[in-house]
Length: 127
View (spheres, helix red, strand yellow):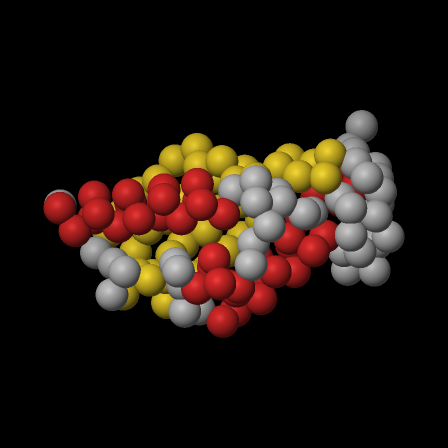
């Protein structure tokens, strides 16, 4: 149980450190070696500069921590061909982190991209 508590505390420190700031590679490498995650974060930070993350629920089992969370930001950069709309967005996601030797080594992510597209004005919300 102590190990899982430490991993959850590590993820909370990671979220707090990256939330609301420019996510430089140097900052991110303090918490991860997962190249795919490094690229994902850089991509989103370019489109939604200094986006914030809010953890709504955190669970841990072994070396894995799963977070149900929200991302909040303003669309100020190109995002998958969508020019900046300068709209504020907030959408839910779930991410799983595998932690080894005090670093995130692998992740799995699923986000509600439909909510994001509705907030960007790309698709209409259901009636």
